[in-house]
Amino acid sequence: MTNTFLYTIPQWFVFAALFMIIYGWVEHKKAFRLIGIAIFLLLGIFSAVIVFGDYLAMGDYLSPAEVVAEEIDDEVLNEIPIEAQLLPGYWSFIIASVLAIPALLLDWTDKKRSKLLIVLTSLIALAGFFIIVGIIRGM
Image (cartoon, rainbow, N blue to C red; front, side, top):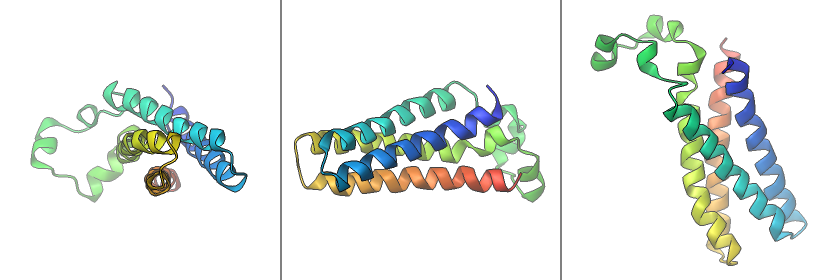
């Protein structure tokens, strides 16, 4: 899997989901909100495949002694490949997808608490997006 694929696909997922949710709120169309939340779920599945499929495995880039001793200073951090630096962003996408499950169920049943969960899900996904953007700018 190429580096470009690892950091562009999540960006498209986040923007598509946010667009659908915002459009659904503005136009009062529940189907679009549900599709936006479902896109966050798909982003979480994609992220889980990437993380648990060893595409971003830190052990491949650091020696076992460095991992155990947690000796990550500026010199080592600059040597870590982009695949390993993307890990926190992908974890935030997985957390966002976990929050998207109750948000989807609550929005489906028209509960007022769904808005809070949708906003939290969106903010956590945006945090992952900005983590990735920060890594790309540092390249």
